[in-house]
Image 1 (cartoon, rainbow, N blue to C red):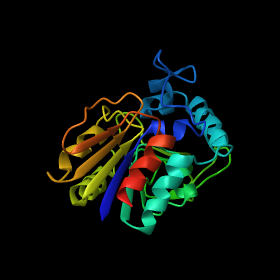
Image 2 (image 1 turned 90 degrees about the vertical axis):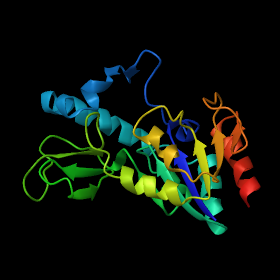
Image 3 (image 1 turned 60 degrees about the horizontal axis):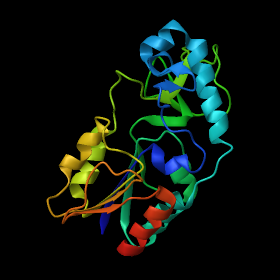
Length: 223
């Protein structure tokens, strides 16, 4: 069976990765636009690079949780594609092999001159770290106001899926929120969230719980 999995911050929160922003709208004490926009990077690149250096360091200290491992295990029986809004590599570390990152990847950097020039990167990224064309490298992250290059690939995955699992995302943030509209009319949808924003129906099964307990239940159902 072809299964599309849509994941957001909630799937990694239990591993210790902080969710996108605090209730006051700040991200680690920063205004989000200060550290996650091209304008912020142009104004103060050192602050932006330091912010992502801290995120990268933290990512290297955490491990995948039961939700990541359960999704990886599904590959034994089904054709699984994971479309994630997360920039961490926890799906890959748990063993998932087909992961589409809508918002980029924290452990990669790219050239400010050629966005197709992407490098693996696990250390700090500093001012003066240049690509082979002598241009500053930047985090390989999709910032506010930038195109989401993988959105069409993601839409195609959802369109072909016979079942869809949504976990750790409220599906309120566009363009990712629009992906469900591509689902086949007979595709079964499984929604895992402690505070679900959608209600159960004939085609939607809701698990009102955290990812680490809800996802294994969905996986058991689909085996």
